[in-house]
Image (tube, rainbow, N blue to C red; front, side, top):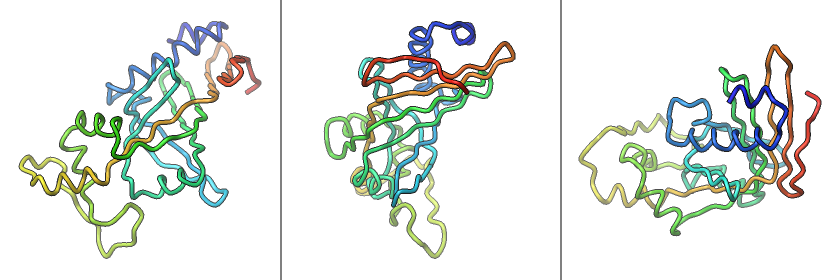
Length: 197
């Protein structure tokens, strides 16, 4: 990847970035496995960390899983704009991906994601209070338990959803002693160009 970034072929760089993102879905240690996403609430950005769960290179779509009760879902229901931020410290590569989000809840996409998720991941959706609620003390969930009542998993499933977002632009910054670079990919116009850092 570094050799590609050292070159000046924006089409090849863009292609390799998406392949790197796709590989990061399955590799928990990959720097791009986790990302920051920002939504808009009352004209102010709200950020949080999510796990990259799926990439569709052809359609330029990215997915993460979340609780339907979370504030980010409320934000997306009012404004579907969602930006992603990735950083690879070894490559010194920053990606910002600008998208429009769609929420999948109780549909085929959500069902498939739920069925493919590990029990430990499912347990994260068993909290009684919604994310961000004021509570008397932390509600500790043992995500490693093995014998879980079906009623609890049914409750968790009702809280689970998938956010799928379609990229309309991507900005990358590559820092290197041989020369820093910044490129921009506009998917609405298919215009790829260099930008000053």
